Length: 280
Image (cartoon, rainbow, N blue to C red; front, side, top):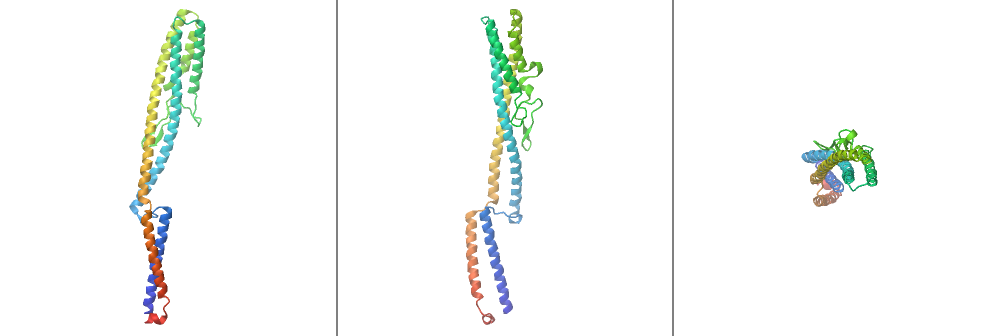
């Protein structure tokens, strides 16, 4: 009988210990708001959460890359607006200068403005981003990873926008300004006709480049939107797998606490009995 009583006491202590551990577990789930604390809690859920974490980590890097590409693209787009405006104005100036009503003084004013536009174009060609990198690089722009198999560039190569060497936009503008300074009418007319054709070609190139840049920006915006939507979806899925159901867990914990309190009270009453009571 004594041995049987001791066994019952040990079993009751073990049961109460398990209840206390369950209550402590519920408290941890509530405070941390996570129901999966170890792989054994939900092997499939734990594995899926691991996959989601890796996806979230990768996409955080891609999103940062896409943000950087978007910032560079916006800077390049702003520069291209200025370039197209300057190129269009240069065509207007040469066209005005070729009319018969313009005198030498007017042509000189146009030439000075063209030289100023050329200086502005050179400033745009030399523009750098906050990291000190060229907005319009000499070589192919850096391809920035923004997805598992997707890389995008935020800008265009320098010659795609401005041309190269003797045919770059700034040089063409300077040549046009020099043509306006020619005294001989026939020679000046021939030179300005050539300058006008070159400026029109360069302006068309700049307009095409701006359109291409706009397409790049659309792709970057699409990548950012996709990453934002994916971030939300992954967060919601992860929350659905590992988040604690607070009302259900609180209710379960309260029930466990009531059970433990009742068991402890009963256990205390039993242990007030004497040895003779146990011997019956």
